[in-house]
Amino acid sequence: LKDSFQADVFKVLAAILHLGNVKIKENGSEKSSIGSRDPHLSIFCELMGVSMDNIRIVLSAETVVKPQPKERAINARDALAKHIYAHLFDWVIHKINQALMVPGKQHSFIGVLDIYG
Image (cartoon, rainbow, N blue to C red; front, side):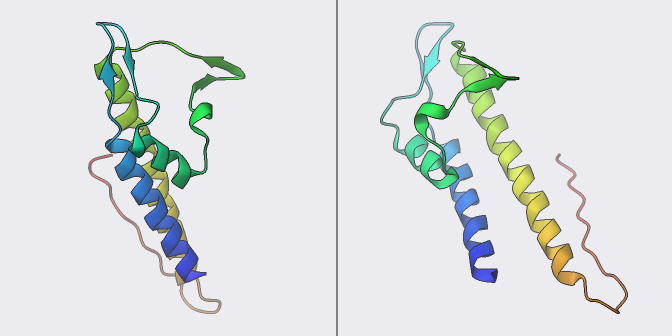
């Protein structure tokens, strides 16, 4: 169990790092794109277990595809990376606190203050 947990953490961290390396190209002043053969996007999708065809902005039950300027696309990419990292961080802290639970003993826990969040 410990090895698979560690492997999962490394897998998500690698995915976040690859997401940060995805190249977003400017297509005019109001549009941007990612090359269909971007190796970092491909590896990100593989590590996260999603198909490149399924990456969309989803609002409720409706899928919306809207061109974005390069700067907004970069900000969205970075926000996604931060969001994934925040969930990973919470998951790791939860697992540590679970491991510290020992029946019959005083309960210990780990708390971490994220001053940047």
